[in-house]
Amino acid sequence: MPVPRIAVRAEARRHLGNGIHAIADLLSPTLGPVGGVVANQPNVGQKTELLNDSSTAVRRIIEMGAPDTDVGAMFMRGMIWQVGQEIGDGGTVAAILTRTIFDESQRLIAAGESPIVLANGIRAATEDVVAYLKQSAQPVEDENQLSHVARGIIDDPDLAQVLGEMSYMLGPEAHVNVHKFVAPYLQQYYHPGGHYKAQIASMHFYTDKANRKAVMPTGRMALVDKRLEDPVDIIAILQAAQQAGAESLTILANHFSDQIIGILMANNRPPDMADFDESALEKKDTKAKQQGKIPISAAQMKFVGEERRLGYLDLELLTGSTIVGSDIAKPVEDITADDLGIVFRSEVDRDSMYVQAAHQFGPETQARVRELQTQLAEMPLDHDDYDMTVRRVSALTGGVGQIKIGADSKVERELLSELTKRTVNVLSTAQRGGVLPGAAAGYAHACASVDLDSNPEWRSGKQVLLQSLTAPLEQILRNAYVENTKVYLERIFDAGPRTTFDAVQGEVVDAFEHSIFDVAETMIRVLQTAVSNAIMAITTDTIVYHKEPEQSFTPNE
Image (cartoon, rainbow, N blue to C red; front, top):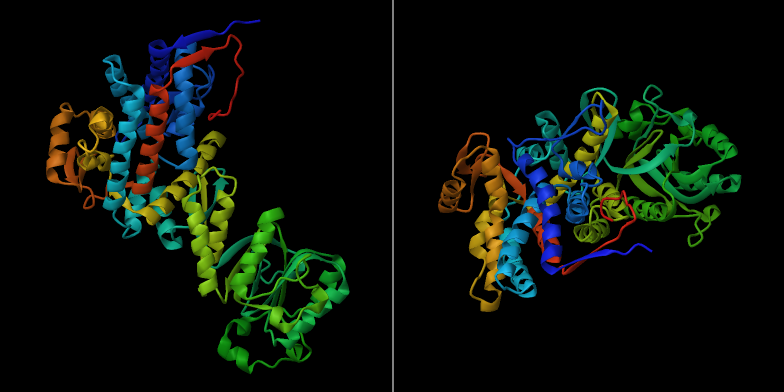
């Protein structure tokens, strides 16, 4: 049986440090607007990738070639991947903070300091810094600020401008569908109202055949949480619409049989322009209306399981409908006019349904939005329910964006798509929590908030964090080929808390006047993640090396 090798205390921490430095040294030259890139050639003869996204760069690393470097490198790889998935940005900053906290702590531990006492001091100082960052954050004023935030993540000014505009127009819970195009391309679209995954029940319901969609004017909506196959059910729905005096009818169900579609088509009158004009609608008295025919649209819900149940409940709230057909609801055949909700407009195509509903701004809807927003604030980006919760908030607040982006190769398209999705999340975070002076200057200004005298025993640990907070800004200065970084740091401190370094112009400037921003909540979570991982490293006493370790291709395992 293979005997594992064991490294303890100083040797264990030295091995961790080897890997921490390997990854942080790899990524640190990419930090800032004038930073470099990581060149990766997967195999001999293949095209070299030029990467400036830390999460993607570390994902390409499978091993470093030596166990005493691999352990720290994989530790860092997992942290940076976690930052990318849960926060969306800041992996390189997290790596630099972790390296500096680890190095400063190791120097003190070698001089006789206790790792546990140092860890307590680092945590206490982190609480002071987090409180300062929250208090100092400034609300986002316009789409230009969001575009500048996006520009710090995506090295594409046009795409950054579009994403800033979309995020500002759609709000902090923006839901943006990203579609990949097979060539360089950029185009955005907006869809008003709540968005749900549904498909038109039959091509016969198309009102706009060229664009393959059905658009309904103001009318009623029926929510049927079952398969519609019994003619009795659909006749009851049509009678309820007639009793309600519906000018149009949109039916959402789990499925429509061919027989049901036939009955609906027999009672369907395609809408005309007068149906969308309220003044003309009051005077309209056509033969078709006298015969009881109204414009009808039928959509099939594509959500399944819990998301389908929640989708129906949200639509019930938005439209004022009553869900019928499910096990806990009334039977479809008992539906009445009062069970039909009100929609100002509905649009259904092959993939989606958009609904402008009557109760979007009602108190019950807003209460549910606040509840979901609270859940989102506490939920990491990689949580199983995160995307679903964002979709629900977006639908309840009424607005969906679509962006088509393209690149020449499949790999470039995948990278661009992933980075675009993460940038949208960062911009939403910026709208919720505000922004700070960019180039990591917010950390540097937070040094003044750390109380060194509150607990003398923790003073050394607090000083470790203080010496680490300026490391990301110093790295940006070095990447901009600034020779004396300490002089520039002093100038930034002396100029006040709104100040940062413009790496493009090479000047100390007012961050808000020059639109150089960092997202407050991102900075806070990056700091907390880096501190947590650095403390784990400095308090590690033993590493066990197995001769035949299990391999994992998942970054955070």
